Amino acid sequence: MALDYSTRTVRRPAVPAARRLDADICILGAGIAGISAAVEAARLGRRVVLVDGAPQLGGQAVGAMVGTFCGLYSNGPKPVLVTHGIAAEILRDLRAAGDAHDIVGRRNTRIVQYRVVALQRWIEETVRREKIDLVLGAVLRGVRRDGRRVAALDLATRYGDVEIGAAGFVDASGDAALAWNAGLACREPGATQIYGTLIFTLEGIDPDTLAAFDRAELLARLAAKADEYRLARRDGFVFAPTGAGEALVNMTHLETPLDPVAASRVVLDGRAEADRLVAFLRAEFPDVFGAARVRAYGLPGIRQTRWIVGAHQLTADDVRDGMRFDDAVARCSWPIELHDRADGVHWEEFDDAHMHYVPFRSLAHAEADNLVAAGRCLDADPVALSSVRVMGPCIATGAAAAHALDLAGAGSVHQIDLSALRQRLANNLDQEA
Image (cartoon, rainbow, N blue to C red; front, side):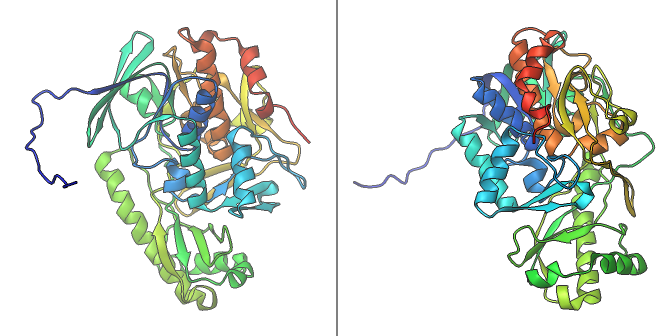
């Protein structure tokens, strides 16, 4: 049969029609919180549309190459898993494939290091199996409201405009983009800057040499030489997630402005700082890093920028005191980890028995009936947020958002049966051996 290589001439319509999608639940943001919400909602039998500005899934866990699961376990010498749902599935599957390994004792808990591409494929395959509708590479142009209800999102993509209507919405954007564009109240840090990090991967490193590397010597040399190499941050770490001759480097600090031009410039500035850091490592520790070179740069890792005004603001005292709320939906024991200065991090670690909680009221926007936040744009003061923006609580709040909207249906998330919500989330609230 002859092949047809003919062409046709086309022209964009003067008023192009938007592609319309309707869903039970629409989730803005495909980071780990949004993935958790999407998978939970799909497994509840809901039609789900998942939206992200990137052309891939995984958010910062993939794009920023975070490489560590934090906040999944309790404290002490025998930490136990306190966040379940997709967290337990990810750990099971990545460990079985040799793509994740544990570090016990660091920050008085268990941290799991993972191979970034393995997590990316896990997310992609899970979303594909659950038949979740995707709109990737989408820019949020506007949000339509009907009083206290979000009605629809208006998106722009390179393939044309898309509008999404849904009964309920999850803001898992990390920057409260949905709430902000809906004209709803949001919070931003005051005078204190919260710094982000550009993580990158080095190759050409012997894993045994890196394993024996003296971290204290690294930090001491960095303190002495940082000005010479024009490095802002004086702490951080280098680790090998799989021991395969590669290492992730988390030793930079960068500003995370909300201005579009300044935010774009941060990508270049962060990579330039990473290059200076590589020069420092190669020159100062040639036995370990002499042959190292950058294999890949992550996107800027953003910790705190803008978040919702919820029905309740979680406070630093709530975290320090281990306040257990009647409407708790997530728990963790991760330290206060406040990146509030360019040269380092403020840490407050907790004792073996400590556990703190996130109330559902901090996820439910005070001015909307069908909008729930998940991940790092829930309502908390900057100190409290520094402890509950890590992977464990992000996964748990994503699950909570899905179940709350499922319970609310066409009603208000402020009037759901909280005992039913707690029952659904029991694995993320009750300590297990």
